[in-house]
Image (tube, rainbow, N blue to C red):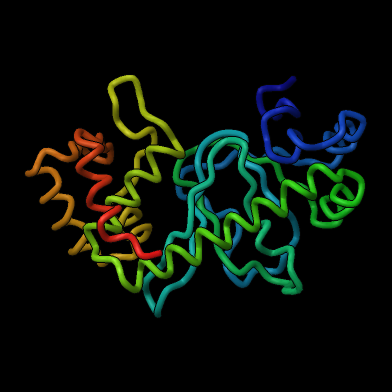
Length: 230
């Protein structure tokens, strides 16, 4: 296997495809190296294909007001990106941008639709992913409307730790700018900055540049659970 090719095992597509279908995947995929900050597709672009993260990390975001963005979720190795465009719309409803350098596998939409027709397990799994994304989006919208900023920051940090794990020295295994973190919490940058300073002063988190360590997870979880909206 060439260094710039995926292993046909790790991504969402390959994990749930029939073994006999993998040669077709290999023939139709395109492995794309991505740099930090590179745009995969933009909200409003015509839908041409689906992306699968092989390495690195990608943020899925949407315009929020005239100059703001809301980060809906992050995708890491093994995740699918662009699947929200599988409905009746012919344009992507969101944007996707790399927050870490890595590689994605791209397949044309027509091939992906054929793959779904052949691979029942993949189709069922995709439905489950779409349902989970919808539930999480609805929950986040409720929290954005009713939960104080500190609770949303706590939720964001706990979510990132669960999704990406930690480094050997305990930091969340993804580096984010404060702007990205504020976009993920749906808070103004100034509010995010103030809350992070408070959490640092209280010894709940340790911030080192773009790296964050949760020093007191029970205290952070309490901030979130006390304010969560059901």
